[in-house]
Length: 484
Ligand code: NAD
Image 1 (cartoon, rainbow, N blue to C red):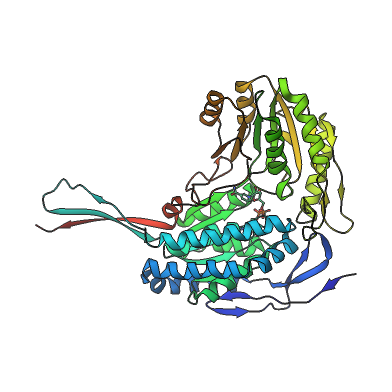
Image 2 (image 1 turned 45 degrees about the vertical axis):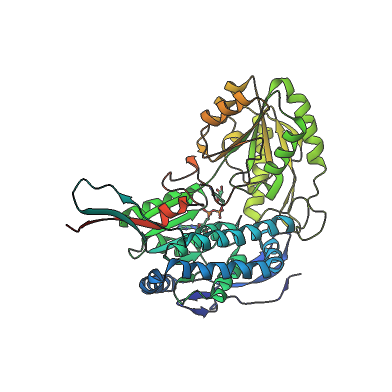
């Protein structure tokens, strides 16, 4: 039986809330799909054009506001996020499925991101350069890029929007924001917070609905100057092709197939902890999730046995219930994908050590799954699964491990567990990944450090987060002043 509070949620265009028409997007709880969270608008093409026009109209006034004053609004948003942390985290778990502890961590991250970029308002600056001409002042000025389209996935429904929206705003841009179909509620709560913090009408516009319809307009409309997208490689490729027609700037962060390399002198207990966190945390639904573990032969048996024992103890369940270590997958497609790869791994000849089953009777639950003796060329070792499935690959030593780790089209995150300093640095230098960790999980990022992948994990254009975000969200003007 379906339970629903039949709540209707709205889109935001030019400061006005637009409730849904007859066509709606239904949002439900992945831990119990009979629980309907609410109904969201299916924005039309006309709505999308209006949102872009509204962002364009709001740009001159917003970009003229002194950056520290814009920062005060971000700071206020950060304070509101603190006061609503528990409520927003609960909403996040209800629609996306991750555990409440994970959701609280994510909302806390969003809060900190707004705080960080509020401070950046005091630091935006250009350069003064030495001039080759007498009595000439030569300097650069950072200006907003303009109207930016922000398109996000469901797996971090508040942190990813935050790390795109906060820098876009502080550097003076206006926004059209479209969250993923599976997590519109958390995104809407963030937009509400920004409105409450005092963001003027039109500076942020919010659209829910069909990703392809809204997203195509958001990435091909000539009034859009920049597109920041996180999501699948397939969608990212389409966006790049649309953007090029208008020479719009793009930032695309996409999939991963991240390796945790465990060398023979590793602290075994630490290696197991990092594998569990990276592989099964967030139910494996993180772009930086550990999906391959490359382990040196000498310690492989001991590591595999300790990892399997630890993974057996993970409690799969509703993320809102205490004691749950791993929530459900987000939707039926994700469940089906995990199930397909669980079957494929066995067909390809890998050894199934743990899990391998899903339960879709009430929610989208997939067991923590470990395959051993995986060959690097098998599809389970090459393709992004985005679920709780780990492939263990054996390696003879550091060089073999690096070669196997690099033999892949993705290049997002990689980690090595070792007490050998020389091997740790060799790994850091030779691994083809935008994020490298030593004795840390492949997941988890600092908000003030550049983030982005290599190879097919990214458009390889602009990094996100920290001060690197300024390069994407501003354009540089060079000014020559002859005062002789
Ligand atoms: P997705 O590509 O299906 O959707 C992402 C967003 O794009 C959604 O908002 C969707 O509505 C929108 N979209 C769909 N079609 C579009 C189109 N034609 N034009 C424009 N926008 C369109 O991805 P997903 O399933 O939501 O997310 C999972 C993927 O995201 C995984 O591949 C994962 O690795 C990746 N991801 C990457 C990072 C990173 O930083 N590298 C972080 C999180 C997730």
